[in-house]
Amino acid sequence: MDAQTFARFDARAKILKALAHPTRLFIVEELAHRGERCVCELTELIGADMSTVSRHLSLLRGAGIVADRKQGAQVHYRLRVPCVLDFLSCVETVLQANAQQQEALLE
Amino acid sequence: MDAQTFARFDARAKILKALAHPTRLFIVEELAHRGERCVCELTELIGADMSTVSRHLSLLRGAGIVADRKQGAQVHYRLRVPCVLDFLSCVETVLQANAQQQEALLE
DNA sequence: GAGCGATTTGGCTAAACTTGCAAACAACCA
DNA sequence: TGGTTGTTTGCAAGTTTAGCCAAATCGCTC
Image 1: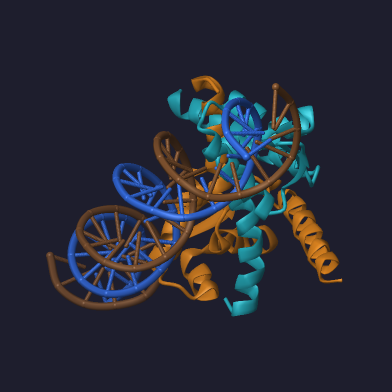
Image 2: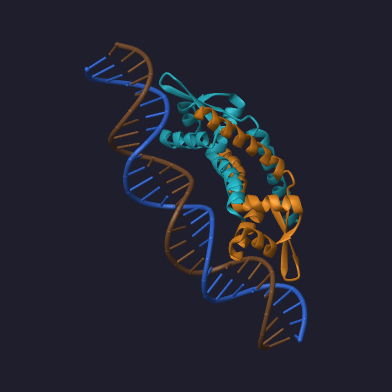
């Protein structure tokens, strides 16, 4: 694989990597369903240290998946790319296929 | 976030994590476009140690993304869930949005 | 300017991931 | 059976990531 090809796949992998964490997926789904949320609200929902949540958000922002907006002392985050959710429907498909295979193995 | 909710998101994150690597994305695209490939062919295309490629394939198999089939001494891998590619179209969207923002910042 | 709540960043540790080499395995052929 | 090719696994080193605490920053209000 030459350097250019690698760069192409690496850029895509970076975006997937940003999504590949339970807390970050939770954030994405929350923003998709309920719109903007500030760090404090997400921290409350997630139940981790606010600094941890802030880092996750920063990572998602770095990948271009969310955008932020300052409003007074608060920072509101929102999804920047709406398709990210459709996206997860295929993940569901994989999960279902896996579950079916599990059942088949038990028979 | 309670344990059950966490488990739900963690299962999805595991699948995304399996895809979140340039070499593994390359493999997925190769299998999607060209069908079955054996480890040796993929190793040739990727240019890494065969043991490394084998490990990537094993990881993808563990996530339920690919399936394998032994044929003599060779092991052929194929995509198990065809939607994985559509899936990547959203990643493209993110990349394009990021590129456009980059341009905007340069003006 | 001091004080306060919201957020980010620095520092650090533990855990997870990636990789190549060497060795083990497996299937085939001579 | 012994050798050869294709694949996987054990091991060790290097890199990355996640999480928390503490400290710094930011915006507002008094």
